[in-house]
Each structure stands twice: as structure tokens, then as C-alpha cells.
Length: 183
Image 1 (cartoon, one colour):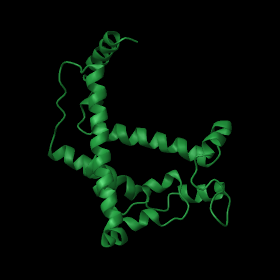
Image 2: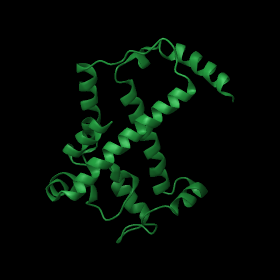
Image 3: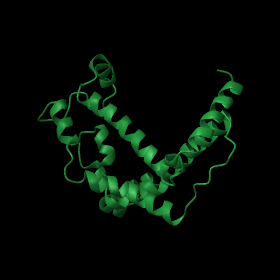
Image 4: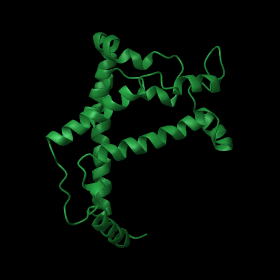
């Protein structure tokens, strides 16, 4: 598809989307990101549990511990690690609530009438990813290199010797807030 056609399609979509209540909601982006992240993570869960057939076996070559954890099969460990452990709601709320509060205190949802071009939109998404990754990498490195921060804030993330996609959620409350602030 050439850039003029892509820009025309984007302009049409923009005109429709900016008129919907969902897109006008100040917290639309965090909700969209959380939804996309959850879908992505569930796909990795399916791979961990062997639920993707041949594709899951191909993805299995990228596991950090292909044989599973000691004392159990990979499937048994995956089921244990994905079990909600009573803190799933806490982790969800620690991610979303600070964003909802910021959005209600500092409303920023003013969408321009004119749609961005595909090139501008791509550049903005790339810039946002680069800024987030730089902030996240800096805070994560700091948590590893300052013993107090590692033991009091970050150690929970490394509590399991076996790594699965679920480990991304094994964060302390302080780390959840710091990670959310990077976004």
C-alpha cells in the first residue's frame, strides 16, 4: 500500500475513531495497552502450557529453561506460576489506578481534528517506545545496582529460579508504581 492510500485510510479511521466515546476517554491509551499486553501475555502462556501445538513447540526453543523447573514438569510449573496467588488484582490495580488518577487530575485528551500521517504516527510510536525503554532500563539497572533497592524493591521479581512470561507481574508495589510512571 502506498503512503498516500495509507494516509487516506488513516484519515478516515481517525475521523471515525475520534468521534467515539471510548477514544475520547482520557484513559483510553492505558486501557488499550493493558488489553494488548494481556492478549500478548496470554499467547505466551498458551506457549508455556503447550497449547499451541506445533507453533508452541517451535516457540519452546526460546524458553530460558526448556525442560521446566526442578521437581516438576514444565506444564506443572507453568500452571502454578500462572495461578493468581491472591495478588493478581493488586498487581492490576497498582498498574492501572495511578494512570487513572493522573488522567483525572491532568486531563490531556485533546485530539487534533486532522489525522497524523502514517509516517508521523510511526515516528511518534517509535519515540514513545524508545523513551519508555530508556526510562525502564535506567530504573531497572538502578534497582540491580543499589543493594537496598534490589532487596527492598526488586528482589520479588527474581524470587523464582524458573522464568516464564508470568514473571513480568512478579513485582513489588513500589516497582509497579515506578514501572507505570515510566509509561
